[in-house]
Image 1 (tube, rainbow, N blue to C red):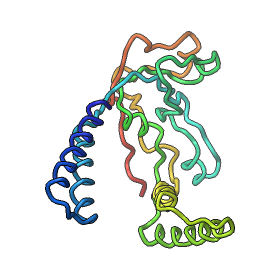
Image 2 (cartoon, one colour):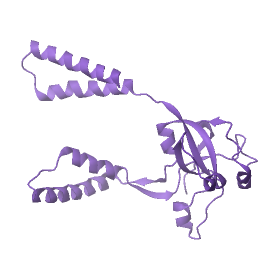
Image 3 (tube, rainbow, N blue to C red):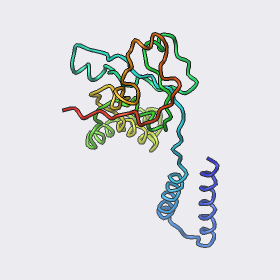
Image 4 (spheres, rainbow, N blue to C red):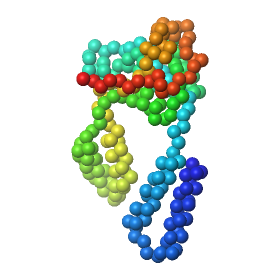
Length: 212
């Protein structure tokens, strides 16, 4: 963070010096120079730091008599129920119901473990829904004599882009047919967690095949 702040400070000082030399510079040129430069700085300084997580893996596949709902809401063996930090204390019930694995992951991979499978809105649908939402925001703001800000619009657009029509509860799974898990049975959990002496990485994870 200090490196990032220092980087941005140097940019501002550079611009100040240039402004003192040239008194005329349009806001458009300012945006064209400053915004991309700061973006590049953040990209360079961005880290992909890994940390140890505790991952609760489904040991027995859940079932729903409705085939569509089964796909949408039932976790299957190997699917991850949740991801916790290294200090999380599991209850006795959790320890006998889920396979707990220690995994060294970055933030992106940790999020993917609990990511559902599905499709988002099309660009046309996003813009249509966004127009409706903006109209609603303006109507509410007008009551209090206010205006809708760019930040509010950006926030609503981000929400729409993150909407997913879920078809499967999880897109990724821990492959329990390999990596020393092939002899694991759910009943093994009754005598304790069998893999607590190991720390795994993303290599034990697989992406599910597309639905036909």
